[in-house]
Length: 236
Image (cartoon, rainbow, N blue to C red; front, side, top):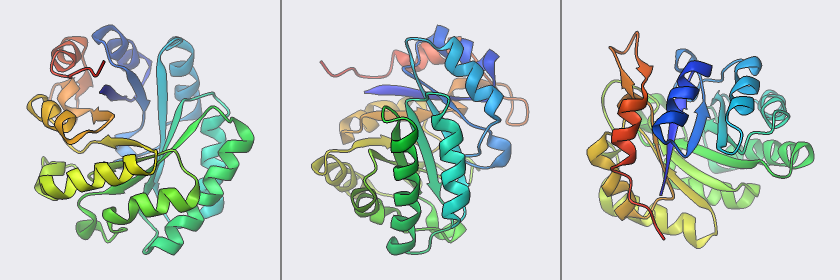
């Protein structure tokens, strides 16, 4: 299983690399759970992360396929390995499929190496977004490369507060049956990582658990990531 650590700038990216993160994920929490960062930040993180995988979140996306496609094009042009799209706006599978199809075709034309990850929210009822259990169906129809579950509201509640283990296990199995990558995130703590691995996920995503300081001034620290890395089981 790979450890994805979300960073907001170059300094945090260096800390994440030094701490042993497998994937450096660029986002901006000030703009939401999957808030998009500035292009110059994505570019610099890609440059300094040579030899490591980089992902970029492009937003808790409203149901605006054109806007989403342009954002995806920008991220793909910098050579990121993954682009994450939060399906905040679509209200049903049809809307979500159309949005993801437009993104996927844009990314394929811009950079065939970049993988498209559709993200839904375990706490969807709190924000009125897409039923997260529809995500594998959406990804399959849209030709995406993977699925991720996260939480939209960052108030200390975790993924496991909204979806039980049986539901998550079934979700991971369905994603894998379709040949996709499966990532789980959502205020995960160190003690959750072994459980994420047991559920069969390919990637565990964290930010808060990799930070020191309070929420307003939190920053990623290599010592926290070293500790997290030691908790991540590695499949041979």
